[in-house]
Amino acid sequence: MIDFLSKGGVLVAPILLCSVIGLAIFLERLIRFSRVRVRGSGLVQEIVRHLRAGEDHQAYELATGSKSPMGRVLAQGMEVKDQDRETLETVLVHAADEEVRQLSRYLQALAGIGNIAPLLGLLGTVMGMIRAFMVIQDMGGKVNASVLAGGIWEAMLTTALGLSVAIPVIVAHSYLLSRVDRYEAGLYDGTVRFLKALSKRSCEA
Image (tube, rainbow, N blue to C red; front, side, top):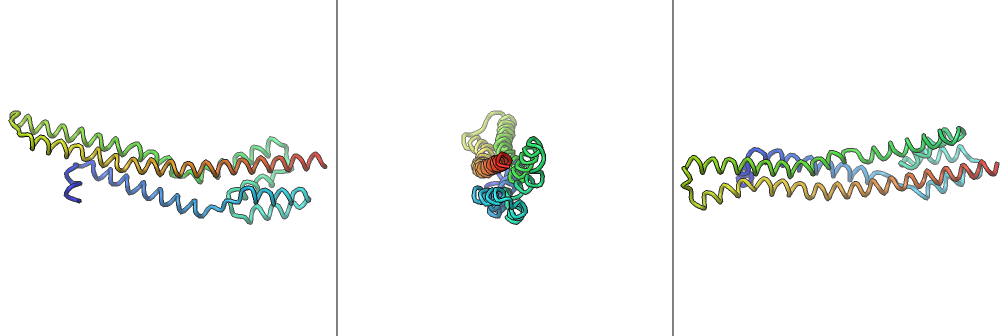
């Protein structure tokens, strides 16, 4: 395998490095997501129940003790719940955006690898083809088909390798991005329910 890959030229190493980095990012994000405790609707429902009962301290303790993205967002909201509506909404949106940024960490790099790997492969192929035609020129055009075919397949090896890296990386990026989107939707749904509960309590008061 090493002999086979070595025929692809100097750009094989960067492409393989891209595959290693992509795999590392994917595994790191999977581990990160597995540790995220998503207590969306259940946590919001419990906090809303405490708020309606006037048990603000218990609601805050529940949010901070959940150690989940939703809990952290609502905890920040409860810290400013007695301020004006605009301030409260700004704090909630900022907190939710920060949680999404943390969950989306390295995903842009993963997308970049998915774009760079096939370009490196294409560049390797072009460089290989240039070398093959330079050999043909040096031989005065007198070259048999086997020599020409050998030069071409070695040149195209990097393109195949680049695509082999890029395709799974792009699939991995799409999968991770879909998980982030689900978390984001859950966070904003929870903040809306929290705001409605506070508004209803204010009207009742």
